[in-house]
Length: 506
Image 1 (cartoon, rainbow, N blue to C red):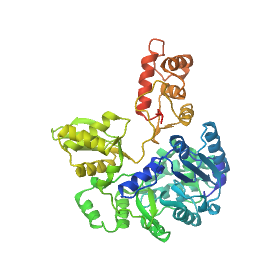
Image 2 (spheres, rainbow, N blue to C red):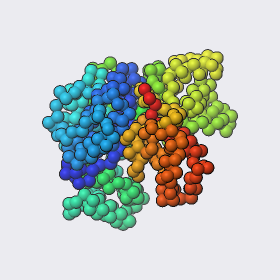
Image 3 (cartoon, helix red, strand yellow):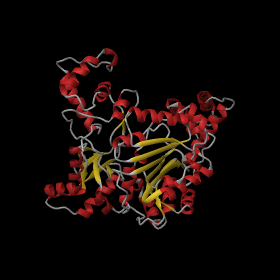
Image 4 (tube, rainbow, N blue to C red):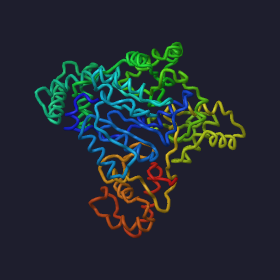
């Protein structure tokens, strides 16, 4: 399953959660294509190449009625994943050291199969096995996600990989390989004949960014024996041979509306050939990584997203309202990625404002339609659904098929998952109930770690004061006192609720 298991034992991979590798995202993509997906609340999940459980453990914590299995070829990574699951009391997830070539589809069926960061890094025989397992191991309406390095963007990555591997030659220990490879990369970047050409730009950029990355990422991304990027057309041919079908990009980001009119016209002219459309978009974006949602070839899914299918989804605010446009022609909203939308559509403006005001609560389509009807006197539901779907694929709205049990305001005795409390005691990000990774302030971390549901406000304030010291305060942060701890606590709890870190009881 992984190209070099000993290297993963020596240097485990990153402990990360990926929104694109969550059952909710796969179900959302399916819904937009008119394909009913298995209910997320009590689904069965297989995570191929689960590593230390960074993606699967938060899913298990947020979906207590789901049944999850993670498999990996690295005994050390599986041991670390089991230790975390046991420490957090997560009994709905199993981690198993297994070779994918020996793993039987009869272990399923699985409603969702997740395969993030594996496909490009294993031999062809294992790649074929992954697709066979997706075909034979999925339930009738099951979905899979497979990610891989992609051309054309990974042409530059291949140049960086070649440089790192040449620099690491002769070293046998992974950390020493990373250090030697990075040193050689820096030497090349400083010594190039043409530093401003495409090759020089790729090496110089990598020499600036890769030293700031975790050594495990650098090693497993660039220094493993196997790393085979693909053109989408080649992956699509493999899917066809395995009786699988590409459904959509798991990122749910459609950049086509940002293209110039000639490029949009070219795409529209290829609408009957989904593979060529995807290839053209990859070329226009210089895409280096793909995360593709798959279903069985016979699944009755639409080729393209049609906005009316968004009626079945839930909506969560992503964009911030900026107020009236400078020329007064409409309202402006900005996505977390910096995309600005200016709209004079009263229905869409009302919906985006309502979602922002209700954060972290998700709103259903009927709720949003009712808000628009009250505000404007009427609502064209087909138009509203299409506008919301467009905002969802434009990073202005988060689309969901499932609503996790999130407390929208801090309860009297706030509670976070055991996993989130454990993560809060470490230095890394904390994964929310919406599967997003967030960095927290020292006070937020200390507070979150206390939220086991047994303490009210007074008890939380006392516990925070007892552990408060200059050593665990951020620089220039005033010390907490009996006079200011209560407002600071309330502000912190409100922020944790806004981050979707507080559990609601069901």
